Amino acid sequence: MRIRFPIVFLALLTTLSLAQDSPDKTASDNTASSNTASDKTAADKAAARNREAEESSSHDTRIDISPPKDDAKNHPNSKAAVADLDIPEASDSPDTSGVQEFHPWNPMKALKDIEVGDYYLKRKNYRAALDRYKEALYYKDGDAVASFRLAVCQEKLGDKAEAKKYYQQYLKILPEGPLAKDARASLDRLAKAQ
Image (cartoon, rainbow, N blue to C red; front, side, top):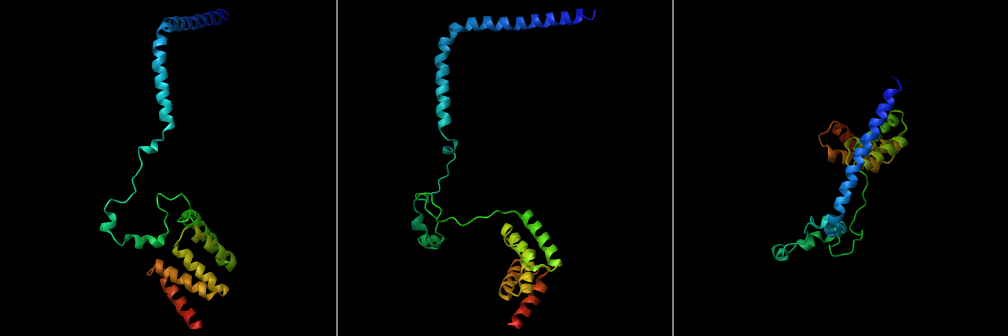
């Protein structure tokens, strides 16, 4: 009994696989004569797909950035207003003369740098804290806390001009911030020391 079941099961699987193969073969024999007519349409479709693949989809979504026809007449002084920006025209070659240096924007890394800077500041390692606060400002321009603490480090290291600069930067960012009173007091103290 144990041997009969696997033998019957194997025979059933063999029969099913043979039954599935035979309709495919007969269907392919019947369609062989109709393939010559459809080969031309298939070739045409393949050629159309190749042409589509060579073309870029961005051709459909190009944005016209050229100025309107009467722009110079309606805005006569606009060329002078943007002349100092040194932006290459669209017809110019793609050079980098008008590109300013970019750096990564990563507020989470800046926050971590501030945290590590605070660690060094508490241990009075002002040089290490200064580097961390500068790095925080690299990843997040205009961070108020990093600016204030960088000013504190600069003052502790004896660079009064840089300290003054970063205290003023803090006050520019947060004129009524939580450290604004301390920043003003430090600026007054630095002014009296000179």
